[in-house]
Length: 278
Image 1 (cartoon, rainbow, N blue to C red):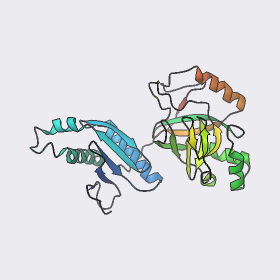
Image 2: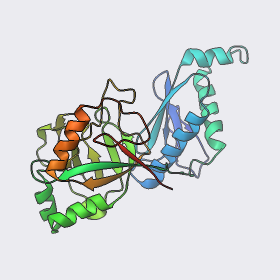
Image 3: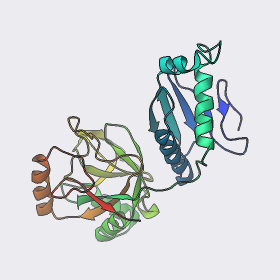
Image 4: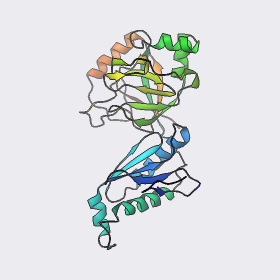
């Protein structure tokens, strides 16, 4: 891989990963340029490694499909260097690169130990909850029930959170359901809407405009800024969808409205069902 100016090859010429600066207080690790399981697995493995052994000045690691942004406090890094290097002020970025490289090289980022947390998301499919379901099924020349079975029968992984706070991008959509975005985006998509765009699956955490094909809706609040854990889902979580009736949707929505705490390993009654599996 040919490195651009300011980039540092991370794992050798046979690996796709590279580091380069992202402003004056972050660096970007690239593991590829496409949406594919290999790249997202490397990103999640790198996050685990950095969070398990944070270096002085480390703030957070923000994942995307094929890259990882590592944010740090330059002043703290400088203070850790000033008694070791005469050029400490100029060497902050290089020192962070060296530290990150050492941390990640101590355990292969190819080792993608999946989390044992599976989050079950109840979804009411079709009708006013999923206005694009019929059209999507017709596009693929399958029945609506088959489309729902395919979507709910798969297991997904949260590749990243983006677009809006708490909006999960999910890998694992069955190829038979891959569908182009709508030609004309909607001016308003309800929070909780479950959608498909190309080979991606996702859920709208807030009421926003959007061009994804909406096939259902969950009554669970995906983002609550006043909660200790604002985002219901985190990168690396595994997700399964459970079809529910409109009546059950309303029950869970009412229960969720009365609940403000998102913490805990198991939630029922309209919040979160964290099922442990191996």
